[in-house]
Length: 253
Ligand code: BTN
Image 1 (tube, rainbow, N blue to C red):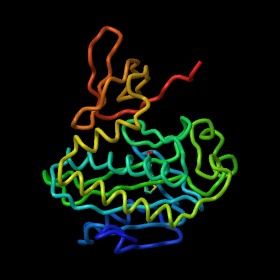
Image 2 (tube, protein in one colour):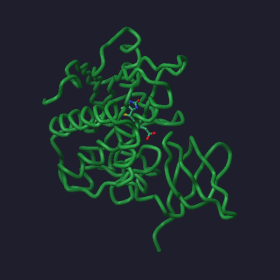
Image 3 (cartoon, rainbow, N blue to C red):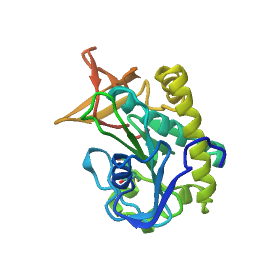
Image 4 (tube, helix red, strand yellow):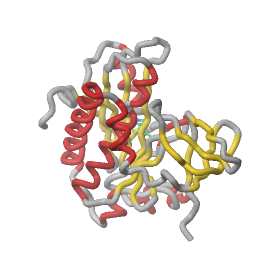
């Protein structure tokens, strides 16, 4: 692997509750930047907003420990690095037309192929670690491996490509791309990463529905700002700034 730091220490387990939880424990114990936890299956994988993340065998489930020494907003922005890296690598290796959806899903043909869960020790002003948890639905068939309720909105690489992919090759390409983008982020800052991320953001300038807090808002997804917030233009012209929520796009006619 052609990385300076990412993936030099790898903890692998066949079965684990959650790679993010294990990575957090390791980070608290002082694991160095670039340490990765990876598992074949997770029994308690979790996603954003405390949702369950179903992690059958064949997926690529891993978490990377970063130590960016920035404040918690900048630390949260590192999630965009993961989304951009996945979108780029899936396009480069398999020619897939990938898109990113705010805040950090990666889609192929409008269906989710990857989810990203970022966690940081936000109790401190300066984050002493950030965990980038990345789940890619890779080598399993969606119809046989996932519950019916998910099949409308979720896909896998195997389902899209009609064949399995080499997980090691995919993993190594991701390590290299994440390291490259992390270097860019440190050298020139988040706006450059965000600009690149927006090139994949098919939801921008479209009418979307956003589920946030206890409401559902409909509006035009105008932009994502430099703190990673979604700017939604409501019907009455007001711009609503959303920090946490779920975007869905209406079906194409
Ligand atoms: C989401 O879309 O809600 C985020 C899903 C993140 C899933 C990954 S799989 C590896 C890592 N371990 C976890 O428990 N979650 C993340």
